Structures are given as structure tokens and as C-alpha cells.
Length: 354
Image (tube, rainbow, N blue to C red; front, side, top):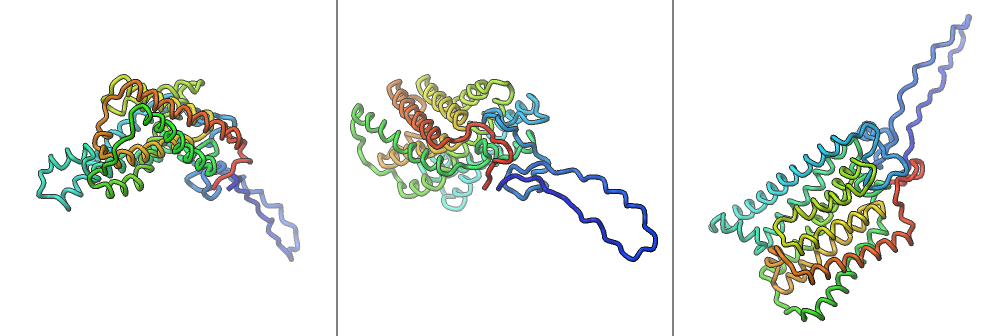
């Protein structure tokens, strides 16, 4: 939907039959015009009227540099976001696990049930973890208008909507690149033994239905909100790129240096992709493909719990992982160039929504 300012006009009242002309009526005071809508809702809608629209030419990491923005707003939003992350993901996860225990396995000691779920020995644990992380989307949707006075749709791209064709291509590339790298890894480590994980078919349903949501939520929070909030603190986008990547790696818990570098490199490459393509499509596509493929392979080899519990990897494995995502990033950038994907906010009359 093209943004349009709502026009108000009125026809002068027609009066007839008067013997003496009356003094012309004093024109009414001009009414304030609403801000241009940026969210695809009805122009002049109450929600959008109170929100700011990023200026044309801004890059993705600096979309929150709007009128009235201040460094303390960004830091406040980041602090609230991280606090809510730790609180809500845990509460939702535990609530789901408790509900399944109370309904289906009350005879099992609760501590044992929770421990097994946490290790992903049961599908309930994966379901709770994925839906807990999905609340990151809700957190971002609240923080954007409340703290920054910007519509949450600007987290998607510099055009405030998902660029569907580019996303579909990136999702396909996110499948192809890891498969190629996994093929090279197989030559080094050998072909894995097929052994279906316990409760495989239930795990499969959870993986297909909730892993994409979990991966997308992490991208919206780490490469979306944190990148914009921290990237808007300074004029250079690199502060947001580096800081959000570091937080992403640290929030994955205990890990050895190789695994930390692996995750930091993933976050860094994903953040650069967001900056250079102007949106989350590439990062979401790669993250969804990576998580779904990783847990599908684990399910086929009976190692879902082991995959969940990884705390260290070798430098060789880290090189394969980073190399696979670097290949994806290169292909995603080439496709973005071919499709002429916008990297900055377009002039307002040219923005397309919906």
C-alpha cells in the first residue's frame, strides 16, 4: 500500500434567498495532518499517527535514528529486551513442560521429567524451548513502539515488509550451501549411521512446526532489534554489528573457544548480510534451514539430545560451519545484487507495502 497523507477538504456551504449578503464565514483553523503511515494499515490510523517513519537513505542498522531518538532509549530498550528474553523464554518453556507433565506423566518425578525435557530426550523439551524463544518476536513488537516510537514492521526490512522472492531464494540457498559443506565433512568424518531417535516422529512434527519459528524469532531479536537499537547509538553501523554478534554468541551459554568463534562468526556474517541487503530475509532463510537440517540429521542418527548438549567442537568443525555460512552469504549477496534489492529506506512516495 502506498503511503499517502490523508487529505481533508470541504465544499463551502451554499446559502440562497438572503436579502442582504452576510459577511463571509471565518475559515476554519487547519487541522493537523497525520504522519504518513508506514505499516500497511489504513493511512492516518491511530497507531501509526503516534509513530515515527525512518528517513529515506537510512541503512538497516540505523533505522531507529528517527526524530526524538536518543542513545539512552536504545540502551534502555536493549536492557529491557535482554531481561525479558531471560524471563519470558524460561517462563514459557517451564509452563509448557509442566503442563505436559501434569496431564500426561504425573507419576514420573517432576525433577526427572524436567531434566529429560531439558536435554531434549523428549519432544516436549524441544517444543517448550522453541515456543519460549518464539516470544522474542512479541518482545520486539512491544519494545519498538513503546521505547523507540517506530512501527515493528521496520524490523523486517528497509521497506517495512518481507521481500518474498528474495526470501524464498535465500531459504533455498540456506539448504544447498550446508548440504554441500556436509558432503565435504562426510568425506572427512565418514558417513553417519542411520538410527532413528527415540520418539522420532513426534520430534519430526515439532522440528517442522516450531524450529522455523524459533530461528526466525532469534533473527528478529538479535539481527533485527539488537542490531537496530545498538546500531543507532553511533553513526557507524559497525558498533551494532559487532555488539549484537557478541551478545548472540554469549547468550548460547557454556562453550569452548572454537564453538564461541563459530557462533560469533555466524552472528557477524548474518549481521553484515542484514546491513548489505537491507533486511532479515537472508538471515532468517539461513537460520531456518540450518536448524531444521541439523535436527533432522540428529533425529535420523539418534543424536538429538547430543546435538542439544553440545558445549564444545573442534576447530575443524568450526571451519566447516563458518565456511558453509560464508558460502551462503556470498551467494545471498550475489542474488541481492541481481534482484536489485534495496539497501536503504526508499523515498516515502515510492515505498510499497503489503
